[in-house]
Length: 153
Length: 231
Length: 152
Image (tube, rainbow over all chains, first blue to last red; front, side, top):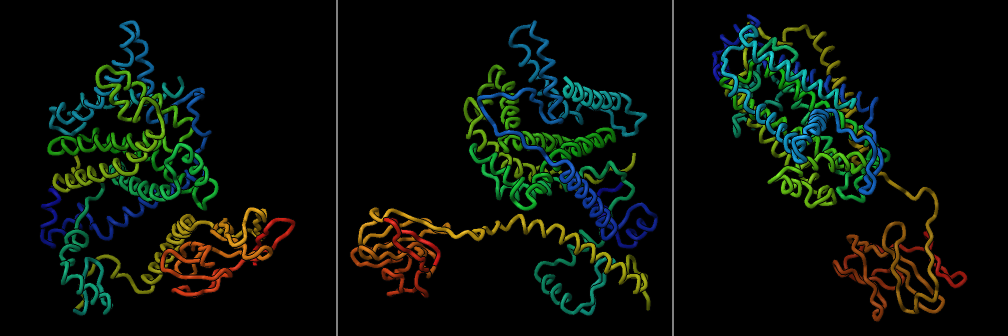
């Protein structure tokens, strides 16, 4: 596929041909209408959620009384559970759980940043990316798994 | 000028034409509109998973709008924050809707960012020449988590207060820079008024400004590197 | 010469008009659905007393003859002036020029506005300066050793 800059400077006959062949469509009105429809659907989902499941509001903060069972929001359950699991490393020393637990999260973020530079494979076809896909599926399942574990622990 | 062709649209209204001509003479908008809107092509058949970047951007814009509206009534003071959120929810007309939209927008945005990242990963779209845009994207993901983390404290509820205490405890116990990082985040040894002011500033100014800058970089890179085609 | 056009230009007019009005109609409805809540959210509630008459009272011996006392009435500053032993006046302290709060000058027996120098006498009448109207009067009476102020 051509870069956007190249497509932009194609002559109009060429652009009309691409549209006629169904390879591309017009930004206006086709693409815009599509985008507007998607935005409206997302907005409707949001307003429905806001109406049917309004956010709750518990008591005002009291620095002198810790409530029981504090759980983070779902997207922070994974790091929360990971820190809890790191408690098991107490046998190495009192310092170990937090130092290793927090460092691991740093490592995960670092790996996430580095993915394009760690993957030497130039191919994009699924069949030629077995390792990357396996690691990806394991990563996603691991994240979902530890999130669910965090929810029920 | 009797008529003006803008892609599929033909303008014939005299006043519209006059207005357009006036602007065109000064800003050369005809060329710009043709290039960026009316004679522009967009890819077809990208599939539903390709929409999640755009959906995330839309939710981000919604968060800016509802966030501005909440800021009109929210008071970032430990004595008043909770009361102001109660007032937004119960007293101000449609306040419940604005707060609900902001809350669900935040949750949904984290989810759509993750789906977007999954699509880019499994589609192998991060590969050359788009490596740096993946890096920009991961930074935007971390900003999203930063938004969630700082925004969570603002209603000053039991949960938000204690979640912040616990979440800052772990990095605070790291050797070396740990305690320093914690004091820098909290503005002291505990979660206090200073923390609330800090999180509020991060949430409404620092993070949005950073996100807009990174989004610009993200979009400029898409333009230069192009939308990746089918495999 | 009919030129081939793309988009909705080639549709017959009746259908085009129908689709157009349907689209415009739903766009209008959607806009109303967004802007009505937005306007309600942004406009502060107009709390207009709720029918109950506001009153203010202060012990007579707390305000000496010739003195003025400032107080809050209907969420705005107001003042009581004890002109003589038995004569009291209550006025809004909001200058009728541009809404500043007037000051009471005991020796001159008048109110002066610090913003543009409007002057009022003890009953609120304009003596000089840019004020277009007298100060809004309230009813004030002495009742069982108290000064009682009510809406006029």
